[in-house]
Length: 562
Picture 1: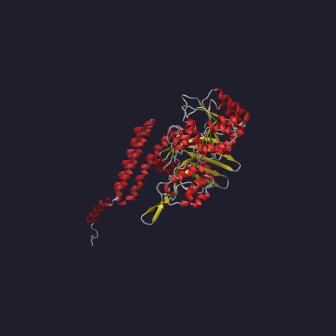
Picture 2: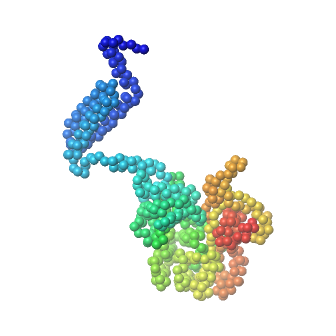
């Protein structure tokens, strides 16, 4: 134990000399001094630039700051045995010189340029930090028409929750190749669903206010009027989504007394511009259709229920014609897909049959080669079309289940069997079915008796496939398929019924001999929808359960047996 002689000042002085340098033997104290010195130097540098900019006695204030700094750090270092007291005194001196300059600055500069201390500054900084973090974390970004990114909202931005929900929806949708989002909201509830290959998948529920915020968020950036809740509006958005690339969204919204509704279609144009030979027509069907399509006359009707690809097929047919060598026009209630070089005409909402007929007559006077009508608006228009079809190719959409249903509507609308038959080139009926996921589909052996009833030779159909959605990991454990994410299907393809008319068929139809007309078509190898769909099943492209769903239950007995 160290002993100090009482009354020996020399000994006490020696201990003090040893204790003073010991103050800096602590690691954090010199680091703290260095941090304060660096921070002070940064602030003084900023104030120096400010004084130079506003001509505020730059040399005088630099002398004040340097003098204050010298005094502060000298006092701090001279009283090391009282480190914290010295730091407090040093900070007061530094703050006094800085505060003096701030007061002088605010006295000399105009009102808008004065500095003010407020907690809002710190809040703004925190919000800026949150926004920066949101930008960094974002997996989906909105873009302007020129491709410039729109900032991702973060922090207390009221749009931040809406963007978060939108990002979750898009990640779910793009991963599974969805084609549509739907948001429905009213005062008490909200429902969000994602359509994947024609089937809706409900999403986690959100508060109604958040769903409305999501609608307004997308409407705003799609260039729509957010204050108009009732009128039907359409707009477009561009997004970029990391590994999923860039996509175009078509946004449609409308309101009623029951609430708001918004549809967001993903890459609609790209999906609708598929070449005709990729839609799913069988080779034999393409061969039957080709002679009619090679002509530049006759009416070609596309018939199917809603949401089964009518627009895509009509656009594919129109796209076969070169709009720069032929005059190609459309008459639609709403232009869904704009085609380069094609003249798109729209029908005003509420237009009566007479005005539409006059509009059609005006188009015909411009001598077009090809006209596409998205649907037959009035029966009276059919006679105008049939009369002009000897010189003009018409593509016409009808909401009918099959070719014979569409034929019946066409004959009745024209009102003259001979005129209707001479004008008709072909009727194409279709359905969209989901394709089995090639990664996880399961093969099974079908019942030979059922195959015989379906006119399918058992020797040529050793196996069929059904959906699974699961893959085997190891010997026993399964997990959701990484390709279809557990759905069992990936993508869609069309199944078709093609009624192609030759001269014999037209003569038979004109004479009203429907049975002979049907027999002639069958002799020419016309396949019905169920037959062509079963061929897709045999190819392993789809399943019995899927064609049953798409055909509306017409094949339920087949499904149960097979």
